[in-house]
Length: 335
Image (cartoon, rainbow, N blue to C red; front, side, top):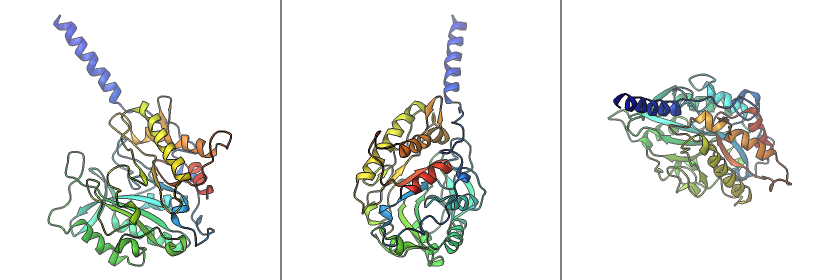
């Protein structure tokens, strides 16, 4: 009897272990893990300067710098440390980035995803943005900046004795004053026109460590952008298992349709990303176990004609994990 019980317990443990094991994501294709297949360093240059950023279709990346830490932490293809991955994304056409910062000694920011340092500092981010926008002055880049560390298990801890997060950020702004679109780092600003923001970084929101928003920064429409979804943001980031990727696809689709039909003066931000213990970021993006990932679904949906569904006339910002070149190109062509 005892032996049978031991076998049963062992079988249950083995089943649980197998369920928790990583399974391969879908193969790289034009929608997934082929960032290098897109080359769009100047795609905004030909657009009218009178166009509001809110009216555009913009490819973006979730956890832009997350290239280290393993399958449950990495969200982007690795094109190098110290901002090399960011440079590759900008060249591909990415125009909204998601930066997660830890307060480091010397009142500086280092880039983290949870507990994992991503071999880059905030100066690397700002330096790459400065170089890119100097070479491509017709472009602009939106930034979501979030204080990453909560001090909890699995997260990082900020260095002690340092200045508040906002004060440290203000110090960076003072040193890179020419890089930032001023109204978004000195108050709650409306979405600018492309002409107003060309050659600049536009801070969309400044989030605290547990999702709160620091007032006095970013765009006024994102006053309620905290942790997860809000009025103009879809960020249902918990995907409980691989089977639930279908639910995440539907959330992205519904928000995409709402964006296409929504207020053209408001910027909509749609996170295609998601994860959990039983669903890695790469699986949600690329698919796994026969379940279609969000990235290939999006490319198919954007390519479908009016005989299938109402055409998407504006995607807003699509925040992607492991985007493929074909998907980036398609989002840009919606403009």
